[in-house]
Length: 125
Image (cartoon, rainbow, N blue to C red; front, side):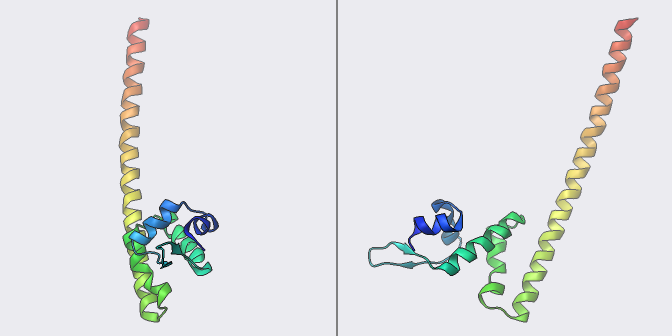
C-alpha cells in the first residue's frame, strides 16, 4: 500500500510515517518511480511504535528496543527489558523532581496566602 493509505490504516499522519523512516524505526520498499510501499506488518509495527511513544520513550530508545522485535532472542529480550527498566528509573526520578517542585510551589502559595491574610487583617483594623 502507498504512504497515504498506510498512514490512514496505521492511524498516524504521513508526516509521522516519514519521521519513523528517518529515525530508522520503519522501512518501506520503493517503486521504480520512488513511491513508498508498505505491507500489513508495517501497520502493526507502527501500532507498536505508538505504544512505545505513549510509554514516554524517545525514538532513540525505541530504536534500541526494536532488535527484540526484529530478531527475537533471549539476549535481545534481556537487553530490551534492561533498557526499559532504565527508562522507568529515569521517569521515576523525573516524577520525584516534579513532586519536589510542586511541594516548593505549595509552600510559596502558603506564604502568599498568609501574607494576603495579614494584609486583610491590617486593613480591617
